[in-house]
Image (cartoon, rainbow, N blue to C red; front, side, top):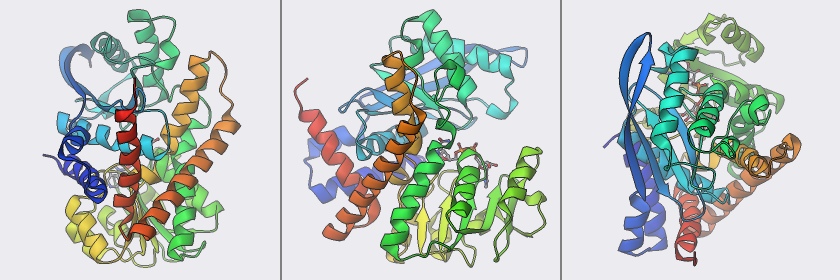
Length: 409
Ligand code: NAD
């Protein structure tokens, strides 16, 4: 099993054991309702290829499955199942009428041009006909995919399966195809709300230093929002490495370096390794916003921050979680920290079903309220039951999923 599925199952088990759920309920919570493996005949880089892919619907107890579709060379069934499990918990914690799902295609996303991506979207639409749909399972962007891929999939799916409801089968689309403008910033905006709640609960000042691993769509936007909120960003990294300045980095310069096609390491500051960003001195808050399983037991032992906020999905291994817990470092888990994106998607989906434009402002207000409320609920439950935040978030989510499983259909 990969570290991500071990961590996702660990989160389910922690919440389920706390609630003392029955063995049969635990079995349903740990194992997905439906797993579809497929092979996609595509044309990539001028060659005919046959790509492996998976769509996993972990639970549809609270509504249709909802989760991203990632394109990544190393993606596999275990990883997709772990991510689908996390989506079940995340959607339930945010009180969305969704179950949890995820998909993946094993392909190196960096090498794909627009034609390659079109070919994958068309093959996916054929493979997923009868599997996904606006009331069954809704796709969204994930690692290696973006709004253009969701536009392509929605359009191909409308051609292949159902012209009427093409817009509602995928979210995170571009505004011209029915997406909402806010979506790009939704995850970072939600993450800011989670940090504000955590700051208050953990007694961390609003001008504290923050270190962020990853400077992609989530990490970059979050850095900008945090600076606006009064924080200094003392360290950041991307796939080329990291930079560190205890007095605070110039985020505008970092953004410019990325926009120019470079790396955060192009700015004038002390170099630091990508892992070093997580254990840097002078950061009260550390935000992994790039990869999964980066906080293992060794990194957890060396983290000097008071708070870890998981913007990435599954950034902490099960051993890493235990070590952070033992060291008394609070961790806002992924399911509570990065739900902003899927809440934005929910508004896009409602608008598509009702064949109207989405009110971006209303969506943004709702996502801020939902993330703040679910984080307050999590901190309250952790304090009341004397448990860690991940167990508290998982327990709240599981109670809702079990209610959904028992509700008459
Ligand atoms: P992205 O591809 O836009 O950015 C990823 C960033 O990580 C890039 O800056 C990349 O250079 C960096 N990176 C890659 N390898 C690295 C390494 N070894 N060390 C340090 N940095 C490295 O991805 P994203 O959309 O920002 O997503 C980041 C994480 O957040 C993922 O785990 C994703 O699942 C999660 N997430 C994203 C969203 C969303 O709306 N985009 C929603 C929920 C969760």
